[in-house]
Amino acid sequence: MQPMPSALETPRLRLRPRDGRDAGWNLALLAERPLGRAAGGLEEERERLDAQRAAFDERGFGLYTVELAETGEPVGYCGLVVGRATAAQPELAYELLRGHVGSGYATEAAAAVADAAFDAGFPVVWATVATWNAPSFGVLRKLGFAPTRRAGFDGGYVFVWLRRRAPRRRHRTLP
Image (cartoon, rainbow, N blue to C red; front, side):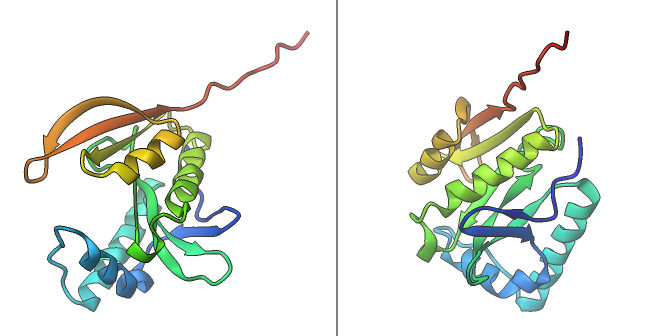
């Protein structure tokens, strides 16, 4: 497999690997989560995100900051993680700031990441979604992900595993 690109673009979005520059808005995103997350301070978050960037460079994939193409405003993140999957068949992860949910940005960013993953040679991309998260199921359904099984994780929440296989490449037979 080849490394994922260092940048992706869609008609409305730019995606670049996350790093310490994203600490401020990422702390705001973490504070919006229903269960919250015990976040440290700004410097701790910068270090964590810089470590994510180093892991992206080392592994060849990771999380991207999703920015509006016109303004550069960050709206969330999207990318591939090992998560509950494996490095050979990674998991798609995405999350948007609340003010940008419902805009189609998650679908647009996730489609760009999944397409780039298949172009890089990943045969399968997984996703796990908590059963209460209907919007994420909608995003994944639009992208062709199909449920495969249920499992309990993280404080008793039930997660559904979804999978999308790389599209079959059609080859012409030469005479």
